[in-house]
Image 1 (tube, chains in turn cyan, red):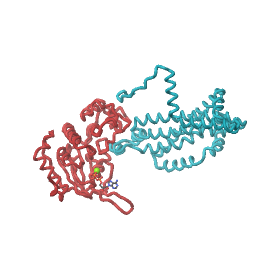
Image 2 (image 1 turned 30 degrees about the vertical axis):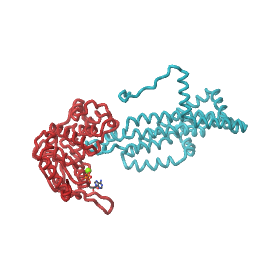
Image 3 (image 1 turned 45 degrees about the vertical axis):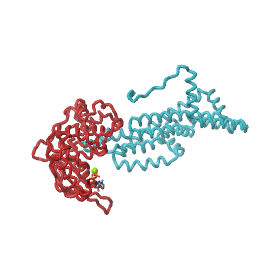
Image 4 (image 1 turned 120 degrees about the horizontal axis):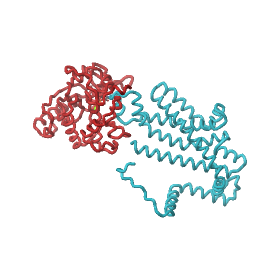
Length: 268
Length: 277
Ligand SMILES: Nc1ncnc2c1ncn2[C@@H]1O[C@H](COP(=O)(O)OP(=O)(O)OP(=O)(O)O)[C@@H](O)[C@H]1O
Ligand SMILES: [Mg+2]
């Protein structure tokens, strides 16, 4: 995008084997902690001889996922979709609420305690209440994800709208900028990096909260796979659902981090 | 939002009367409330006139209320006593009509915009259609041609201040307010900036009020220098600067220049004159 900065693209190696190896090496370099824990877990199960109901070894969990790819992929996509939709709704509502609070003290006084109370209530406790309102289906799951991502977006957008470059507020006032102009050209752009932090936090917890809601609802996604497997004492499958959820979470989180980095680069 | 009725470039000055001074302060005082009991008397009993097309500099010890005066003129603070008018009207009116340009110590460039968009910003805030030609011309005037697409963080401190000054000049303001615009720069860059500002000003002749700590800067740039006392700030001295315009940097080497600088320095620090080499 900006050639003057002299960013050189990494040369792609001609030899595909070497290329695969370099990806593998980077993966190991980054996740060696996780690999060690999994290795220890596998060894421990082998040595102690626990049966699979108590503690299945990671390799059989992998095998479980590989042999039921269709089931896990479908449930995983369902959970992912719900997590994304819920996060988008929650972040939109949170940002709108933050803008209202920025605009008027009255809204600020009204919204801030409400948002705080909502966050203080654990998600699991919200499930039956929201389910009673919206029905025992995917809408409740989306609502739970939205409620959970609302707060970070409200707080971070709110602080971002006030984190203005030094002197810029004075500049806008002396230049006769209307409130709308101050919002449009100053406060909103200033809030973007903060908003990205909220997105990162939201992305990290969205899949988790979606699964908790699905688990409680038992109707769709990885959460219900987990809950059904647990009911039939199939711990390997339950952990398979967790594994898929973790992978989705980590990917979402990494994507959000790199998006945040790109934005930061442009902003400060 | 009637975009159709808007002129492509900066509008004409709203006040065409030659008799009314551009800036007038009449026994202006300003107190700041610190808490329920205590108040700071920042400025007391300041009266001054800045004529149209004049360049006036204010010198004074730190904390004497120079920035406060500028902020009141810019409509950013209200005086507690006295009256203050800009272009025959209130500062707030003047700001609402986009007639003022400011460049303060913080360059206040928006980091997410390019230099071009930063300089063009006042067009947007005034609901005017941007005139890219004028923006480019101003960027050229402050010596930033070629940096239109750069972002503020890619520029040096002096370049950022020049961009801020270009932005302040964009709408052909009737009043230009400068508060230590070069305060954060090293002595060499600062002198360069003074020379450039002098050149730009001699072309535009915008009514300008400059707050500075540098006596040299004040004498080189201004038609008139006002010296203020320590807090609560009031005017203790006014000196007219006779040099012809446009001023060549060589003016700073003349005996007259040094006389004026010494005189003003003495007015600023009356007791410290003996220790100087
Ligand atoms: N917002 C404020 N609240 C309280 N006191 C203030 C405020 N702004 C300025 N003051 C006080 O008013 C006095 C004058 O401040 P001002 O910033 O105008 O000084 P100055 O002459 O610009 O100083 P300097 O040369 O250091 O910039 C100071 O004593 C300062 O503490
Ligand atoms: Mg000051």
